[in-house]
Length: 282
Image 1 (spheres, rainbow, N blue to C red):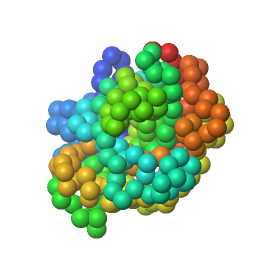
Image 2: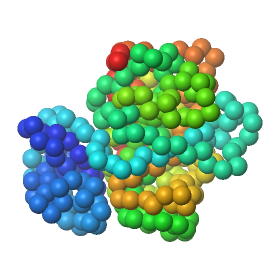
Image 3: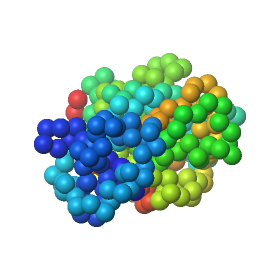
């Protein structure tokens, strides 16, 4: 099942994507669950699933995509989490512990919206990532139980401003420029995606494949990242954990041809879909 947040007819909506378009779940269930995050927190997946058989209310090309969870509480990202990344960029070998940092929701645009090449930075880079979306509350979660806490998966272009990463020891400024990344286009429930360690990421820049790797190359897999994060924070429904980006980002190339206005960045994970954003000047 594909779960989506969007805008239509001047209203914030959420729904279920079918072959014909979008069934407006907020019109049917909104009194009980005002947002998609509320529906996930209440474990209303069966009620959402039942809507797949109803006629679509909106065509996909008639809606404005929103972030999959517009009111997300926490977005956490795993840095330098692919073996090939270390071979190309780091040369120091894999990390001993995950490198986890937070991102603000204001740092992202939805599918088909512009991402912004920042005025204050010169080295704008793309990073295609698989994102786990938490479905139920958890604290001190074991790795064996970790996947049970995932409601589904989405896609992130975790855009980074590389010159700002050299200005200090923390990632927060470089990773939180306004609308520098993308998330979407929707959440696909875990039962339809399957094993998070058996997915494939393709990132294309203006149609050319730049990243092409399997999630089996992660240093710390999705189960470990969830268990690790739950040690220092309580995971809540709708929280997102981005699992890292494979080799192929601009930082690892000799040319260093940074993103520029007009570039189109697409991140595809076949079992989820395609996230597309065009770069615009801030």
